[in-house]
Image (cartoon, rainbow, N blue to C red; front, side, top):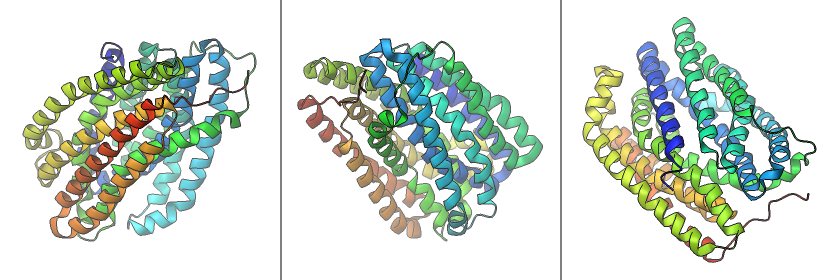
Length: 411
């Protein structure tokens, strides 16, 4: 599996490097207060984007992996389905934005979200094209989409932020996915005929729910920090800590992306034993990358905070150490969740992430009062560990039963 992850890992590295360049530039340009605000905006939008990235695109990937001859038709209906999803998500975010503005005590949050939701159609189209190339096992083409997105963000966000501050940065985030969507669409066959959007919408909903609950699990700590009077004025430091701690999770994402079509294809061939072996090999390889990376980053985190964000972000040092370990565990759960998604039975992933989110939210709300940012980070670490245990048990049960979801629309 590790050989097939090379292009996706390289793309993740480019994406990660560009993301850190952007975050460092924004942190220094905006300062802790506005940097915390844009972190909160992007966290809310990320909940919508993870639905788009992990619902319809995964269904597209699995269907293309099973019958590549219908790839153009599958991609076409996937794009139309995704547009419906994007529209619905934008309506939900804009409807809730006034309440979120009051709850988090963030002035102009509604204005920022009105601009930010413009990114949803472009991101959705980009995600569907990535799902198509993932299903064909042309991971190099999928990597090109990710790299195009990374470079688009780099070119747009930093200059616009220097011109118009936080508003310019959000405009850059909103515009960047559209260029990547054009790169991803090139080369996908034009469909002679395609199914109806509902044919992909139904099976995508459980996958989107699993992905959204996973993201909620490792985002809820930021919401706890934002909502608590004890830490509300320190949100910028916590966003900086999250930015650094996300390095291992970003680096490990390629393992999950490869696992989805691999598990789907093996189970569709009634080869559960081979699927188990592939999952175990992937997990071992993931840990070989993850453990030393997390250990090194934990040791060097104070220096990394100082070099990237400056001495004014020193309060982020200790939370960063804890969050690095927490996100390393989240990366393991994310891989297990992707394997479960490849089988078509995501209940175990949803249960695991909901339990993890509940522990992170409940524990964070209690610990943040007495331990501040460190308490929120520690609660996330405990929640992620619980989710990973549940995810492993669920994956073993699913593969043992040889599940493969009946997702293929009628020809």
